[in-house]
Every structure is written in structure tokens, then in C-alpha cells.
Length: 413
Ligand SMILES: Cc1ncc(COP(=O)(O)O)c(C=O)c1O
Image 1 (cartoon, protein in one colour):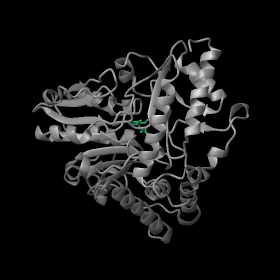
Image 2: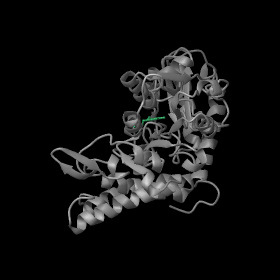
Image 3: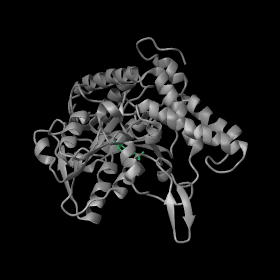
Image 4: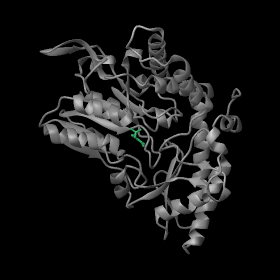
């Protein structure tokens, strides 16, 4: 990988991703526009995971032998890297299975009762919606939500009224996986804290794509998944403010998170170990550390700028196609690289299938954000999402594919 002066050297980046050389259906090259679902992995990450298994595989935090010691060092080293990457203290980084589990950890350990309120938004991924519905069902608390505007922004006109003295927690996405919208999380956090509420940001789509600093955002919790940021599956992160984690009971229990166990009862380790039962995913953590190094090497501001330029090109190009409606903001202001759209007269699944025939990988459906689709007046959409390895030519391939789908299905052009 070369050094990057003030822009991403995309060709150098692409050379790090073996999968991008693959041939897809009908002999077409892969145009991967589904990084919002999961990102591809560079050799640096694949090598880190492989080298862990080849040279250092011992159960972290278990065993008295050298391999276990090395496994522990690698696992804890990954925690320190992740903490620095998001501006947290090392003890504030809890490794989970993914963003979904990180959010569930908070939802299942939070004390709430009838009369309390949880405030979410209509823009949330199901991972930051269903756990709060379930919390409310268990405890009798009330779920409230902020609506979205027709252009896919959060309607913040009633923010002050929606956060009340009874609000326990505000859970909000830091970047929509459908419209790319980046809500003003810092502003929402200030309003929540003024009323004594806690704030959780779902950063599954922001940490991989823009610089994120938990102190600057002012959030109490933040959740994300490694697999969307060039790293392996099976590991995710919950950032939690130290004093809050300290006061929280365990979520999942078992080995590795206990202090003393007697038949009559057990006591638990301090955070973050209190929330990490079982043998840790150390090889995946090694991969995550390599991904953090890779992204830091590129520079997150450059990553964000690259995606902004791809998004601007996509918005301009799709706007030119009759019958295409992009969901969400039509400029890149406070908007990341997720571009969901509808094609008049062609079902999203058919659009996706035609694109797949051409080697263009996109996602179709409601993208785990069903209420958001309803709010925007559609059942489903086709979604292209961009990352460090995508090019303007790939955006053009998407547009050509959409035009081809329109011709194929005899839709208005
Ligand atoms: C905004 C957002 N939140 C949460 C998640 C859940 O991530 P995971 O399935 O890795 O737990 C996703 C995944 O698509 C997402 O896009």
C-alpha cells in the first residue's frame, strides 16, 4: 500500500483486496456495492487472522502457557487500538459479537420501569429498534420515536418536547444504512443530557466511514461491527462510559467474567471483562486491529472524502435517469455513502437481479429498516453502498445497469 497524500490512491487500495479480481456471472468483473451489508477484507487483515492461528493460537485470558499469553496480548492490544481509534479509554471498549449484541447488552442490563421512556427514531436499523421494543415490553416503559422528514432527515422540530424528564435513554443512528443521513448526534446528546437521559449511538455505518470520536460526540454508549470496517465477522464493539459500565450488571454470564464462584453465588470482574464471557474471539480481534491500522493508514478523513466524492457522483448520475427516485437527502451534506433508490415500474428485487447478472452486487429489500421505508412511502428499495475500494467507474456501471434493467422490463426511461 502506498502512502496517500491528500486523496485515496484507489488503485493501490484495490490491489490489497484479493476478492476484487474475481469474475462474476457472465464473465463480468465484480463491482461490489454492498459494503453497507459487509465490507471486503484486505490481505493485511486476512494475514493477521491467519498468522494468529499459525503462530499464536492459545485461548486468551486462559492457560499458563506462552501461546495463551500471546493470545491475550494480541486480544488486549486490539482493544487498545480500537479505543484509540474512537477516542475512548481502553477499559471502555467491550468486545461483543457484533453491533446487534452490543445494543442488546445495553438494552438487557438497563434498569427501566413503567413510566420511563426510551426515545428512538423512525430511521433506525432493526438492531437499534427491536431491542428497545423488547425492553419496553419487559419493563412497561414507553417507546417513543422521532419521525423522519420526506427527504429522509430526522425531524428535530420537536426534539425538546420528545425528550422529557422521564426519558431514560435516547438511541439514535449515527449514519443511516438506507439514506446515508448523518443525524446531529452531538446536538441530540446535549439535549438528552440536559434532561438527564443517556445516549446510545448506533455507529455500525459511521465508524467504518468517517472519523468518530466518542468524546466529541458526547455519547454514553456507541456500538459497531468489525465486519463492516474491513475486519472479520464475529466481533463487534460496545463503547460505554467507564462509570456507567462499572454500575451495570453482567449481560451474558459464564467463564472469564467472574471474580469468585461458589455454589451459593458468584461475583464478577470489573468492566470490560464483566461483559465478555467465554473464550474471546482473539483471532478476529487480531483481524480487527489490522483493519484499524489499515484505515488509520489511509486516514479516516480521506476515507470520508473519497466516499463523499463517490456519493456525489452517484447522486448526480442517478438524478439523470428518468424514473429513478433516490431515497433520502439529494446532496452529500451530512450524508454518507448509502444510496437507496427506486426504479419506477421495476421491482427492487428485479433491479438487483439484473445488476447481479452484470456483476454489480447491491442489496435489495428493506435493509432491516422497515419502518423507515414505510415512512418514505415505499415497501423496499435497491441500495448501493460505497467504500475505500470503489471507483467512479463502478458508479457508472451501476447507472448503466439501471438503464439496462429499465429497457429489459420495458419501464419508462
Ligand atoms: C445502521 C446499522 N445498525 C446496526 C447494524 C447491525 O449490524 P450487525 O448485523 O453486524 O450486528 C447494521 C447492519 O447492517 C446497520 O447497518
